[in-house]
Image 1 (cartoon, one colour):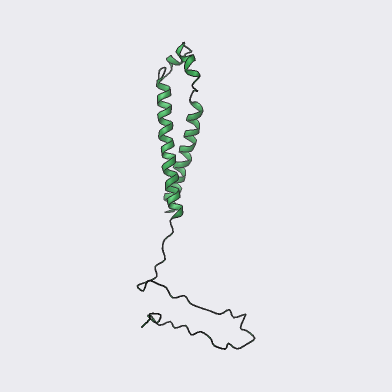
Image 2 (cartoon, helix red, strand yellow; image 1 turned 180 degrees about the horizontal axis):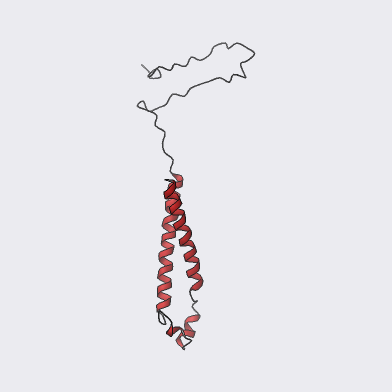
Amino acid sequence: MLYLKTLIIVVQLLSALGVIGLVLLQHGKGADMGAAFGSGASGSLFGATGSANFLSRTTAILAAVFFVTTLALTYIGSYKPQVSAGVLGSAPVPTSAPAAANAGSAPASAPVVSSAPGSDVPK
């Protein structure tokens, strides 16, 4: 379980850094007007509008990966295995009096704790 949690944290960290980088690479809405008049974006690797589509789709995919890993880490972090109480359904609670409190006086009536199986079942 520890390896799975570490792997999910690494994937989440990489997707968060990818989203940050891709958002910083994207042009704002005002940059489209400059590209329409030939500011050199049409000669790029993806074409005039291909860059925006590729970057926005990649950002959306990485954001979805980040969201899924966050949900997975939340689920793993909130998972607590249930303690088995045995066949009876309730575990007996042992009672023990502190030794320091009763050191000077003899106990008037000490509770008897039976360790026999099935002794706590009502008859």
